Image (cartoon, rainbow, N blue to C red; front, side, top):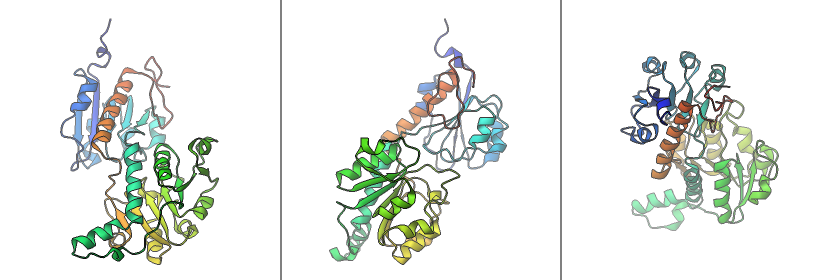
Length: 340
């Protein structure tokens, strides 16, 4: 009888990461899960041209960060069993081309759920309580509670959540504890989710925006919702509303956001993601009632370890031809290891 690892002996798994900015020094976590029989390689670069030749014969690719895997690269892969995005998002991979090549794309949708929900709540509290302004004032020698400007009581405020998946629902639970009146818009969740979570549901984004004092984005980015928060969307909000984004920067028209803040249509914002990051518009850097963080909402010691473990386990399922989880492009693997 074959040992559990014999079926994967000699198979090649490539971990693709950016350099600089590597996520870990050595793939010890991945090695402990994949075993010694797997040929495990780590490629760190910021140029796609430097990695194509090394990826062509990979059986499985684990992609960190947002390294773009486009048609030009995907069509050159020879016998690739699958690609694992070590992330919630997967818009950096051409899903249609991968599907045409019968390459399943898996993501890790739940590794940082708690952290992103906590971070969103922290951004909201920091904005509504003027924490960064007050912190800077105290450090500069000013002891005056009025320097932060007006603040507002959270209890009773109407929170509109765009995208009611894992993170959106986790944030809703936290917000409810603070007494916020929570509603959501998400056309893709089943009927009755609003009842099971004790929140209100809006059938359109416009209705949600009309009803909200605070809006928080938790939607995936796709071809249909780029710049979903545009000039007209911000105009629908009540004047002085607050805006939060810990999802994707490209969900937002940045100039429309800047203009809404400048005009006072928005009273403040908490932002962890940006279109074109790591570049951040100067107007946002100068804005008083805006709290900025560097796409760090997902991060904690525990979430990072969980992501590495789950990515490696997903790679092992691909190598063994086992049923897959969290496939995002509709390509599966049957129990006999044959793609379908």
